[in-house]
Amino acid sequence: MPQSHHDKPTACLALADGTVFMGRGFGATGVTVAELCFNTAMTGYQEIMTDPSYAGQIVTFTFPHIGNVGVTPEDDETADPVADGMVVRWNPTEPSNWRATSRLSDWLASRGRIAIGGVDTRRLTRAIRAQGAPHAALAHDPEGNFDIEALVARARDFSGLVGLDLAKKVTCVQSYRWNETRWAWPDGFGRQTAARHKVVAVDYGAKRNILRCLASSGCDVTVLPATATTEDVLAHNPDGIFLSNGPGDPAATGAYAVPMIRGVMDRTDLPIFGICLGHQMLGLALGARTVKMNHGHHGANHPVKDMETGKVEITSMNHGFAVDSQSLPADVKETHVSLFDGSNCGIRMTDRPVFSVQYHPEASPGPQDSFYLFERFAASMDARA
Image (cartoon, rainbow, N blue to C red; front, side):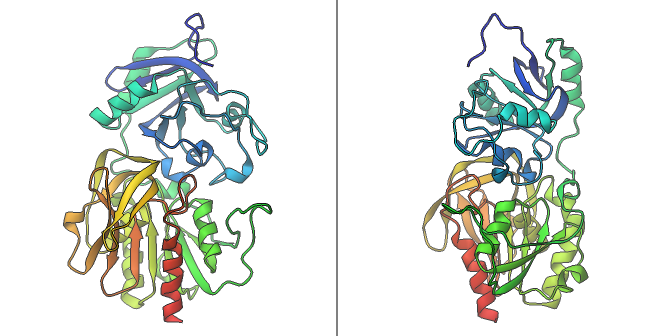
């Protein structure tokens, strides 16, 4: 229900420029400070909150009805929410979905994540688009006691994401195998029992559904931490290398990721496929630059044009940095571009089976237009067999 003007606010969102939004708090109590972004997806709030790429960010949801289908462990993209907080228009209602095992507010509270409802998210989104992703402090106090000046000061003191390596914070601690496949009616998740290819997936903040898509494409997946070296990767004798999504400044993560990727390419001609941060890591390894975007791309409705086929795909995106297409070397071709702003969304080498995309073809949440990229990766390994 919308907030009544008779209710005392129990949550406060303070931006670094001094703008303050009051509302009703739910989830955990306390204060969190992060970069504020907005996401335009109409479904998948649980997948978004558990996407490791959102580390260091508070997510504003432009779709007003958040929480209406509750939560279920099956939809977690990692063990716990990674996004630092949530901003919504309406306070969550009781869940109305047969898959729900918990209410959104209870789920957030049990996992230490703060949320605020009753906010004019249209106004907030317009401000983010116009001024760029701001630094923000989000506070939830059931008694409604807030030190506004102190919250604004904390937002101003936030260092931001530029120069920040967050992949080390969200990556796995040790390697593990993955064979779970995509969810399908009526049996749910399956298992890959007849894999054709051995794939090493480097985890910069990998979503579970990406790993499921690899398994569904015939891959026996071994996941390695973000800091894996060339020797660590090649010790598994893989047929292909996958570079996962993840959070933070790609230039910072590239300090250790780029030498590994270059080492693999110097020693082998293995197929390489990257998504999101993995796309940016590959771009850096090939000699390109990355840049911070004004407010990034976050949503499940982003049109991307395949420059080689002319086809337009509706994609899911979550990134605040981008590969600078003007910095691509001669042996790297731009394959996909955003139809929203022309930014780079895909690259491939012209002489090797090495490619990547900025968006999320695993469709969790989002459309399934781009699943063919996993099949393309598998086909590139088939070609070498």
